[in-house]
Length: 96
Image (cartoon, rainbow, N blue to C red; front, side, top):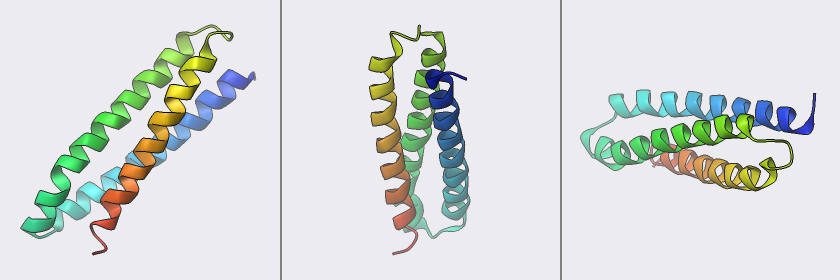
């Protein structure tokens, strides 16, 4: 298995984990008080969009040649970092 394929599998696993964490947050949000729902609903929608964007970038990676994927990899890494930060921030709203 080449480096590109290993990277793709690693990122897919991270996206899957973030999707699961977001599903837990959505369940908590649905059971939360009205104030918390208001605080988190837009943030959760934004995170869902970021996950979709990450999946799209990952799909693009599969289509790139081995030589051209380095630049796309940087964008994926950045999007993944942003997504992880967003999920942590949303989760912190339930701990307040």
